[in-house]
Amino acid sequence: MPKAAKPGFYAVARGRVPGVYSTWDECQQQVSGFLGNKHQKFPTLEQARAYLAQQGVNVGESSTASSSATSAPPPSRRTHGSKPYEKPSTTNATPQDKPRGSKWAALTTEVIADESGWDVVYSDGACKGNGKIGSVAGIGVWWGANDPRYALFTIVPPLPIQRRNRNLAERCPGGQTNNRAELIAIVRVLETTPHTKKPLLIKTDSKYSISCFREWMPKWLRNNFKSSTGEPVKNAPLIRYLSALLDQRAREGQKVHLQYVKGHAGIEGNEGADYCANQGAVLPQEPERDWDALVDDLQNVTAELSIKAEALPTAGPSQAELEEYAAGLADDDELLAELAAG
Image (cartoon, rainbow, N blue to C red; front, side, top):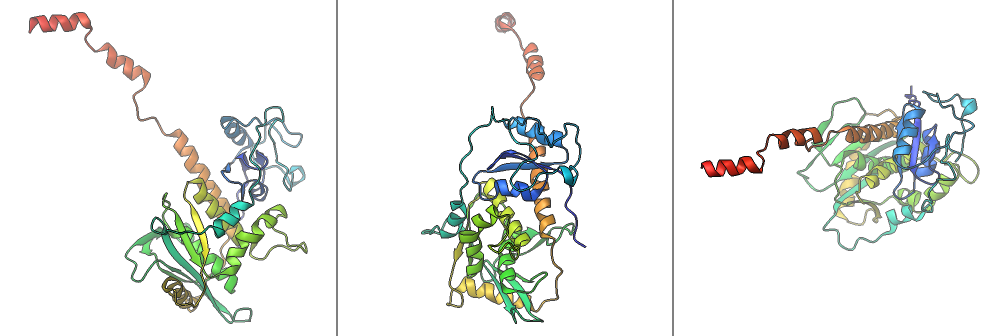
């Protein structure tokens, strides 16, 4: 049974409409695709307000919010769509940058002329009998032949973190389709690659994965991941999680680029990823992952790390320690007396 997301309040300090939101879906509409977004999840409304105040965002009292609320509001009092649970006071709100749908296009269209300063990895998905009953799918990640480097990762918390070769051949969890396998292969790159400042170039032959971000993501964000017919977008929870992983890297200052390469064209990295994906397809079946809960967990980890960083003591001495040290030093007269005696 899928794990229910923990209730809480999402404070958006920098996004399309800053404020406090009661669900991740509402928060995501404000931050996904917004360059330089800044947000955190808190267990209580008061903590969310305090965070926004620290960030210089003045949140006034809302007709739908209770100043004494300590948990998620009942459904009848929640706002939906793009309306915040609490939004900034209009008298003190600062202008925000315009939403940048072009961020997703830049993620996939920029031409990397010199790859020498990049970490380059290939990802691929494979599905035997795609679209048919009994299909089997696998995912492949390829860093190089006999890649000597390792990744620290875990597949499903709370399993212990493992140290394994970065080349991956795994069974696609859940539904067995080629598109899902292609997306999850990119997810596994982001889950297993260490977080550094070195830019990361992910090469894939999946036109579907590239199109998700180059063409469709801005529309999906505006339509709350509904298609033109009003139906939920296929693989929406998975795509949201992939988007959250990309946003996390961007917040940390790491550049990530998705580049399309032609499949089965003799490119070593693509052939290697394809080989791994086909090997993964014959492995034992894996259960579907709870993508919505993973997004929620990712937000919790980000918030906890930020809170811990703010709570760290300063490395320097306190003012009292400096004064105590200064009091123990000899004054000018004492120094002259010591020199004369010497």
